[in-house]
Amino acid sequence: MILRKKLLMLAATWSATRALMLWLLFQDGRTPLGVGGVAREVHELYARWYGVLTTGTFPSGDRLWQYPPGAGPVLLSPGLLPGLTYFQAFVTLTLATDLLVTVVLTRAGTRPGRTRPGRSLRGAALWTAALPLLLHIPLARYDVQVTAFAVISLLTLSRSTRACGAFAALGALVKVWPALTLIGTPRGRTTREAWTSAAVTAGVLLLTLAALFRDPFGFLHQQSGRGVQIESLGGTALSFAHHAGWPGRVGYRYGAMEFTGPYVTSIAAVSLALTVTAFGALLLWRLRARHWTPATPYDAALSAVLLFTVTSRVISPQYLVWLIGLAAVCLTSRHTTQRPVATLVVTAAAVSALAYPVLYDDVVACTWTGTLLMFVRNGLLVTAAGLSFHRLWTAARPPAGPRPTGTLPAPDRHRPHETADAP
Image (spheres, rainbow, N blue to C red):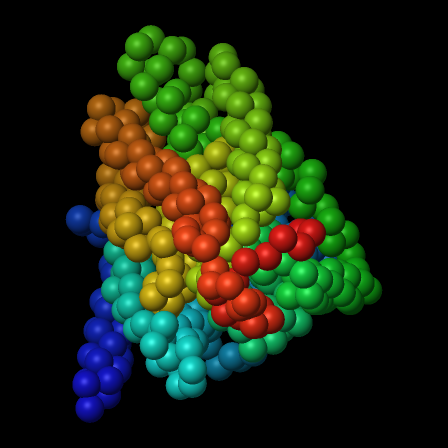
């Protein structure tokens, strides 16, 4: 009875919050929602790419096209609803995907069986309540769809390692980062199966897309030209430098507002170096980790994406959709170490909505209001990334105390265990 009430409350909350997000989407650009233009990306950019994709080619000549070839099928998917406009169909499919994520998280939190005592509905509750903190942005970007691949990948690991790898690969071919969901798979057979499945799935899909479309890898050229976005960590540093007399400017480049001027190239290089360092830290964790719990793959995925987010040259507000989804997966397990990290992510999402779209004019103009707002948002994300990795590293140490004489752990890759196999 208690579970039923919780599920009914979850359903009611999802319905009410999504109705509010839809209403905000149709109020786009009106006071007090700030600069507006949130829906323009679907109306103009996605719809234009859809027209190009239907001709059998990727929009590689468009410098705004910076996505892997798997993004093509996602942007073509609104064509499955011919009775609607492109915008209406896109929003409908995004809402449907949002509902799918909610159902998957709910199922993970209530799944019957021997692992049920370790499950929790907090993950579904977090996704339901936190996503609307980004206002209507999630409905006008395809990050909900990408996050769905990552969420499903992680939550299928305990049942099918091959399915886990396949979904991770599908997500990675849309927006790269879901590949990080495999960083925490338990060593040995689980890792081999999941990573092999991911490689095979990615290879097959790439060959298929290369056969169906022209120039599937043209996005690489555009991606290399990205600068330092004003909402990134480096952008926050340059925003403070602006108040100290730095002569750089803000301009629209590669689909985002970026800084141009002295030292921008150096800041971008530092961001890249930090990303490489973060990757090295994750590899070191994996090599030294000796203790896995059922939540370790979830915690590792959240930590990895946080590290790569804060070191990125671009931290758009829709990136918070990814982090909310991964934090929600962590909270489906009572074994997770990431509860305080999830709180920081949710807080950062609320601040992000203030930065864009509500006070985006201040952020672009580098006013003290905009600068301090980005300092708070990015400070929360940096704190979350540091805390997440610290807790992940600490939890990887073997439990204290000797094991009783004459006992050995049962070989179950989905239960808490120690391992010293090769990665």
